[in-house]
Length: 556
Image (cartoon, rainbow, N blue to C red; front, top):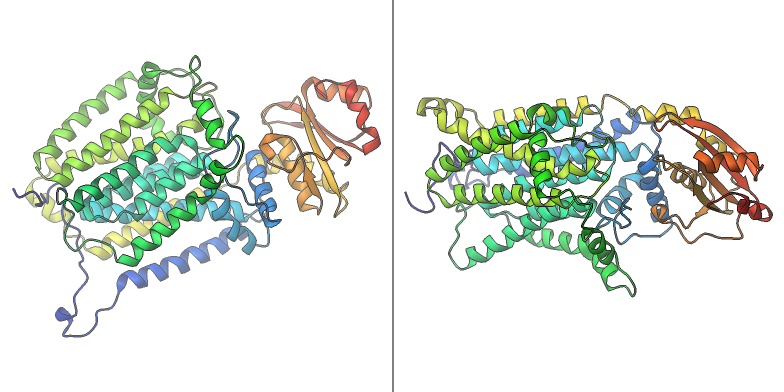
């Protein structure tokens, strides 16, 4: 079989080639791709407006309040160069999420609803690009495989597709990046792979190593192609303007982190390096291997244990049986794919194995506490690996007649099926509100803060004894939304340095809360309970001449 040949049983050529001018009697052919792109933009825009209405009562809490607070800071001209905070004392590599969400946030008039609405559109776009990349990778079978993996992701997310949390956004961006890499191997179109992988790496550090593998493969194969040692399908490349636009987008995306590295003083890269060098508390390779068995367990995968929004701790392993089963199936798939004898087959399998190996090593470097969301990017890779493994084996089992019947589906059928998956998944994912929203409304943090804030004034925010609630982010956000200017030395809020002469809001829990109440520190404007963490919370307001009272209670 020639080196550039393709076995239709494994990697059939994409169907539905655009007609040439000669084939249409000399007339310029219409561009269905342009029409589809315009239609997609219109549909996504209308969906966004509908979702704004759907989430009109949504309020930002915890990490989401930190996110909206960043939006408010950007409205005031404070442009971040790196990503949001991490509980491991660093910030995630880049500000992609903040930069991309800013325009929709401004277009909505600064509504909190813009965050979940834009999140759903982002997920839908990433999943749509994945199905399209699957079609480019292996025609009908590729599109079906990608659509099946997208379906698994929708089920794993559950009815919380709207949660604008950076680990989950990074997972779907990496998901689209991996599918984009498969498309690149076949067609040479690199933009989706590189840009989606870059977006994932910026939003959550756990996606950075797989993203680096993706970008390295693109660079390596591109270099081989220039020397004639690698060939993509003829006529499958993208127009030149696409490559130039993608290069410009890549430069803009990484301009913030680059500027941060060039800043005088300790950059975020140094903090990331220090966090990655922690040794004693790391999960370790053997524990990571055992835990990976749970990640590829079909039950856990569909339940979304390692993907669904939440902060549950990952405990135990018990994944030996599913890991062994998938390892055996993986070996079978590798043998079948290599039997096809084409460079595209071999490259796809090698890349997938490299990504899985990278994910395993990455997991071994995780440090306690091990929350489920830390494995979101790893789970995205696992979903694709499982789907592609099954796809290769099923294609090999089918006889020739069955393959022919499968290929009878034309482009319109594939498009209709893919759109159906996206619309149904998006509708189900947007069908529920996060239950923390009515709880926070019942607590009344926003109303208590709003009643005190005077527009145009500067305020400070401090916290003590807080346990897993980040209520201080909600206080700071409400100060900004009420027309005030919030300052704080709390690193997670990323606000200007605390104004020691300004009135002060103190958010307190556990023993610190009780101490402040017992000594009558400041004015108690809220005393309630956060059911999610089963802790009482107090918010106190102190005038500048009352700040000395904080010395009565540690840690102030």
